[in-house]
Image (cartoon, rainbow, N blue to C red; front, top):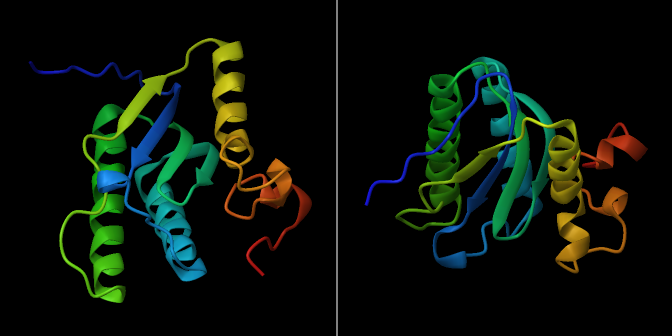
Length: 151
């Protein structure tokens, strides 16, 4: 059975990307910084605005606004492709890294948008990785307390 995903241009979407077979994606700080760098550069290229982004050890959550479905899908395809290629080179491995298809859900009501942003930001606390969302350095909220969260 074919699944159709609902997309609405210019509206925030909660995006969730899992690792293939719940594989641990981010072993080193370099892996996370590589993902953040690729994400940032490609988001600018494709016109994606990010409201929230949190990188967990085996999955990624974000809340994004895309101008249209084509650019949204191209952004994620390009990001996944480059990240997988670089990751496999660095870790001397082959094959798929990210599960597909990735999930996304539009949030059109202000409360739902706020809930999605909070859910993404709170993911490391819910996952037991930290006791405070602003202390988790792989969360965009790290910028709230420091202009240089990666140093």
